[in-house]
Image (tube, rainbow, N blue to C red):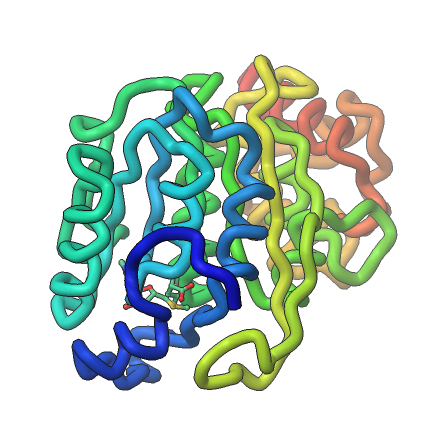
Amino acid sequence: MSAIDSLPPLRAVIATHGLSARKSLGQNFLLDLNLTAKIARQAGDLTGCDVLEIGPGPGGLTRGLLAEGARRVVVIEKDSRCLPALQDIAAAYPGRLDILQGDALDIDPLAHLARPIRVAANLPYNVGTELLVRWLTPDDWPPFWQSLTLMFQREVAERIVARPGSKAYGRLAILAQWRAEARIVMSLPPDAFTPPPKVSSAVVHLTALEQPRFPADAKVLSRVVAAAFNQRRKMLRAALKGVAPDIEDRLLAAGLKPTDRAETVPLEGFCALAREISAG
Ligand code: SAM
């Protein structure tokens, strides 16, 4: 393992600060600084950018982001045991690391960040998915972030980049691909983590588009897609019965067949349907 800074190796950091991994916090740490530097590089050119990192843990990815030249890194970590390790990193990069302690689902970090902003995280997948949906569904677009570089279970990553007709295609694919360019940029086996999780992981990189690929209201589109895939085996006319009155007419007006199933409908079709429903 080569040094990316003058700080101790991550195994020593874990030992010094007693950071035994807690399952309840989804703690599977990345302890190879070469690997965390590689993930940080997937986030793009960080010079001149602020980076928001969620769930830094002992700080492997944080160190990669700082070493890659981020102007400032703002981290949100729920586990207070990690704070001393993060404070050591802040001391090694004076004025460039802000540490916020708490639940990322409750904290708004925007007051601490200046644009352009990139986001990077290796999070428990349920928190990651919830945050991803929030970041993809603000009322206004473009969002506060330029890119998101996020670690997920491989199966979740595949759902984000899935195409119509595949088993993985659903709400996440539509929300991600409507307003962003989404790619899997790295795959990681379980043994890249300490302790190793049961499944493989992948890093997804999303770049915000200047404007959505097709016009639609974010809330209406989210509602339509959630209902359509909630009962993905059903025909659209049945799955969407509760979403709007005279749904068959609206499906036809949007160029869709009421007998189609959600998994065959492309993004453009869902956006057309959302516009028909918004039209009232
Ligand atoms: N980024 C570190 C790494 O790559 O080694 C740690 C990754 S570990 C998978 C997930 C981290 O997210 C843990 O440090 C955990 O304490 C933190 N975490 C879990 N839930 C969180 C939440 N709701 N808000 C902020 N941090 C959270």
